[in-house]
Image (cartoon, rainbow, N blue to C red; front, side):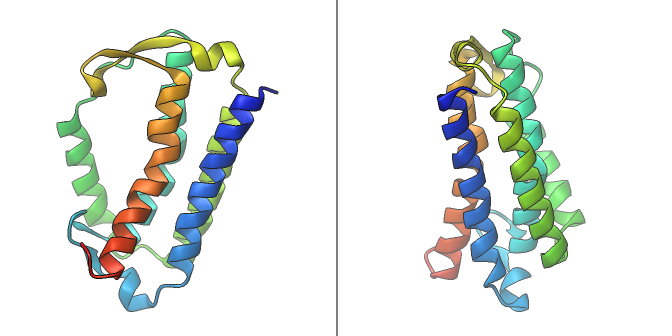
Length: 162
């Protein structure tokens, strides 16, 4: 197993667990509140992170295999996120946290399968102006960063800074 891949996988697990840990301590009222800068409830936001974990690793796997990430736009992502926000606005906390932990583990386990060569492979990423990006960079920005980005939004909101 690649030490680098394992370190990335551990960061994915840590991010998912940090988000789950924060969410576990929320009251039902906090769980149902809308995070203003995210335009969705905490419930929907945590569910969003849980659902995205494996998809983001799929995209990283494509880069590792030398396949460009194409056909995905920020506009399409915004539309999917808005629809998801409506569908999961009242998602149950326990089921959502179970999904977050399970999918975090699945994503991490799949990242552990990457070799150092996989992590170094580069292909273009449509979400980043078709700039060439290594699989490792993509994993760091999106697979690891995703949990922490939304965790920071929720924390800022709860602290009255959003």
